[in-house]
Amino acid sequence: MRGCALGTSTIIENMYADAHNPYSELGVDIRTEQIESKSLGRNVDYASITNALETFMEQYNNVVSIGGDHSITFPLIKAIRNKKGPIDLLHFDAHTDLYHEFEGNLFSHACPFARIMEAGLVQRLVQVGIRTITPEQKRQIERYNVEVIEMKDFSGIDTINFNNDVYISFDLDVLDPAFAPGVAHHEPGGMSTREAINSIQKLKGKIIAADIVEYNPSRDINGMTSIVASKILKELLGRIMSDQAVG
Image 1 (cartoon, helix red, strand yellow):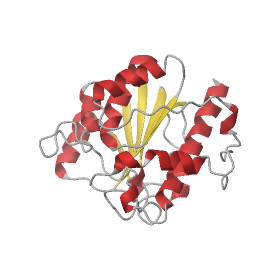
Image 2: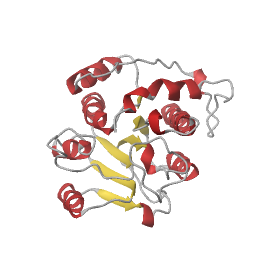
Image 3: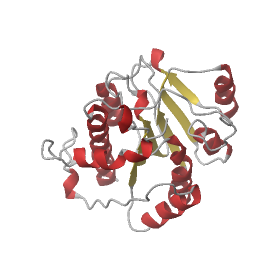
């Protein structure tokens, strides 16, 4: 279902709305750092995304990408790897997105993590919140040595230690549809917003970059998902700034 390209501006507007203060739950005022917003527009190719992010990171240490479907994670990770060196990847999602190809498309939003792993762009891939594993996906998990914490087994990520800098890819459908109805693929039985925020706050590792994807405003109810996404964005920025301050 198309529509994910339309959600970015709404998420940003909600984060800076007068109804919300600028402090993350970690006590970080996200206004204290220089934050620049840059739009790549719509219908850009993957090489353009990688090149634009590499250029952006010549000036800024960290980046959070907002909006689009999950296919954008592959070119984003490529740029981060080129600029930052070895990284680990923590992926929040209802789906593994590990198909080799989907409907004849190797670069579908159902395939980015297969492309990332076959290219050797990350040292480690941990997927959290999964609740849709098929036999094909199970074979891909084994092929790429992916660590999967299915939602039925999830009790927190406190036991996971990341040795490299961490990139977080946050698909909003990791959340139960009760918290985030504005996604293309509703999959009941997901995380609460609280569980997701706790995971970001308690993660053992240094977060250097992230993306928030798959918000589809055409399916949202009263802007609920946009507000949730803006909260996740604020908490990610707060955590990244805290990690940056510690060094």
